[in-house]
Amino acid sequence: AQTVTQSQPEMSVQEAETVTLSCTYDTSENNYYLFWYKQPPSRQMILVIRQEAYKQQNATENRFSVNFQKAAKSFSLKISDSQLGDTAMYFCAFMMRGTSYGKLTFGQGTILTVHP
Amino acid sequence: EADIYQTPRYLVIGTGKKITLECSQTMGHDKMYWYQQDPGMELHLIHYSYGVNSTEKGDLSSESTVSRIRTEHFPLTLESARPSHTSQYLCASTPMGGGHNNEQFFGPGTRLTVL
Image 1 (spheres, helix red, strand yellow):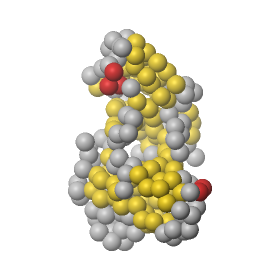
Image 2 (tube, helix red, strand yellow):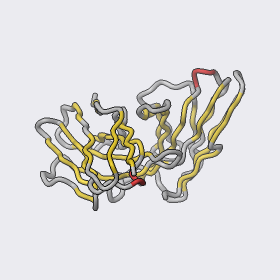
Image 3 (tube, one colour):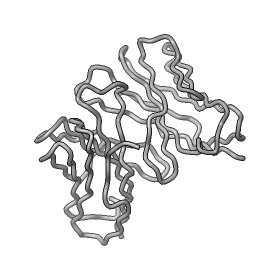
Image 4 (cartoon, rainbow over the protein chains, first blue to last red):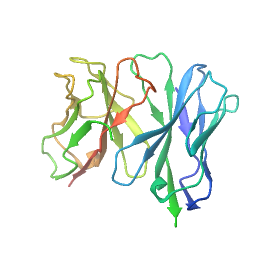
């Protein structure tokens, strides 16, 4: 079974600065996807960024980038130029590739607060 | 935002009542999911469906049941609500092939409180 661990229950950052959220996972599989989802207060969960395990290049989406270390089973999220709208709970998630139902395994979440 | 809807958004109900949480999506997605999320905690998969007439139990044992009579509709039912059922319930969907990103699209959630 896969497990996902987020060791930072809460983080805070000043507006315009950079913050990194940590995530580690445990799996015996070789082909999988990793995701960061964002859950703003009282709003729908949305996908922030996705990484395929077979790709060595780290995924980037505008101000969001990941540091994917497959051997270390680490998948951190870096948010550059933090904005007030980035305040949310962030979840790291794992999905095995090739499974029929696309099950997501979530970490415990990190509450990020961006201060003006 | 994704075209996936949940009603009600908030529900406070007494012990022993039967409740149904509604989830609908207009994206034509085959796969649908129900997650349970306690406040400030991770999501746990409780039910999923590959398509019409397909339902399976997820990782977290739940006393709830689901049905999938139409592609767009995936309701969750509790026959007799108890305080231990107090939680947030999130519905999600994704295309059969996973779409472009294998992204699951989430509804806004139903926050259930059982007194």
